[in-house]
Image (cartoon, rainbow, N blue to C red; front, side):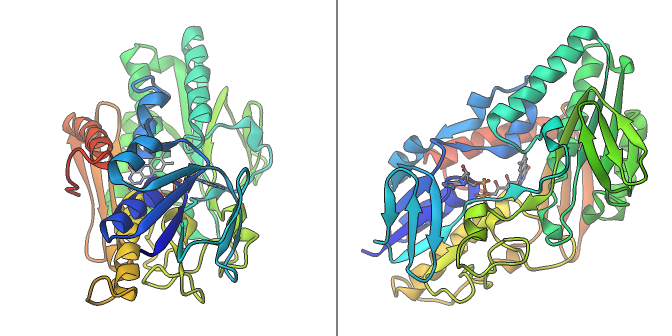
Length: 388
Ligand SMILES: Cc1cc2nc3c(=O)[nH]c(=O)nc-3n(C[C@H](O)[C@H](O)[C@H](O)COP(=O)(O)OP(=O)(O)OC[C@H]3O[C@@H](n4cnc5c(N)ncnc54)[C@H](O)[C@@H]3O)c2cc1C
């Protein structure tokens, strides 16, 4: 039986391991964390609607249910030429026929970034947002700035959706506590039209939401630096804030950057439509670690990472003669599909080559996202079949 190593135990890596196992491979997954972190539902940590523990699924439980091996260790080096990788504690591994890289991405470093907290960080960092918000709530007043950045070398690595979600959730949480009018909420981003990838109609709807929620907007100005209580912009104007919640755009993973694998200037894996890393027959790339090729509005998303895992497993099986059929591609699965949560409802955002829409879903949108979280956990643990 051919052996496949999956590097990274996130949304893409876990789905790849499950799909490879279904195709009949001997699979071992390597992760620096003992758990899979379900990022899409972590947006409720800052408002206390969920705890970080409830966002985690122990990888050991998934591995047991799905029949793959698990090694918790950090990948520190990958050699494409030697088909090998090195782990921090247990050393070099060169005993695999295939390697799938699903290590995710890191974030660009802005000047003064240590003065900010990201909704896309570690569970501990997201929990800190809650702690800082709680202390402002105790004072019953404050100024909060929410923003996200761009990466000119990788436009698809912008992560704006979760920032909007946490900001709308915080607005509704403060409203529920009856103290929203004591808080100033400002949104900032360097793009002229943040969220434009969702289409013109979505922008108009967001415009209305900002006005209704009394959220100030500062867009189209590059970020110069962050200080303890301000965001300084390129024209030296600044946004005062007691709490700065900022998510920089994605940057290539350091292990990929320092490897001999084919990568873009930004450090993302260059892959074929089949997910094979360009120039390396037995190495594949999945999810946020890769450079996604496609329309201007393309974005890195969990459901695309999962599809890339399924495509990868299928293509390796075809290559190995385990199954017949054509090789498949990930590009046909590129779309944006996101249930954008507001705490008291939500909106379904969808973008494809032929469609762009944002469908308001008061109340039910929030419940649907909650239900998705339960479904995702049960599915990964093999308790219910995959439906989406
Ligand atoms: C707050 C938030 C909300 C989101 N909401 C949505 C949503 O609603 N819908 C949607 O489709 N997408 C959403 N996304 C995007 C989605 O979560 C990502 O696209 C998806 O997680 C990518 O999967 P991945 O496996 O490539 O990366 P990750 O899920 O980031 O997984 C990478 C894994 O690799 C591990 N790793 C990293 N370095 C090493 C190393 N050196 N050695 C070993 N292991 C390592 C990490 O611990 C991690 O588990 C959201 C993202 C965030 C941050």
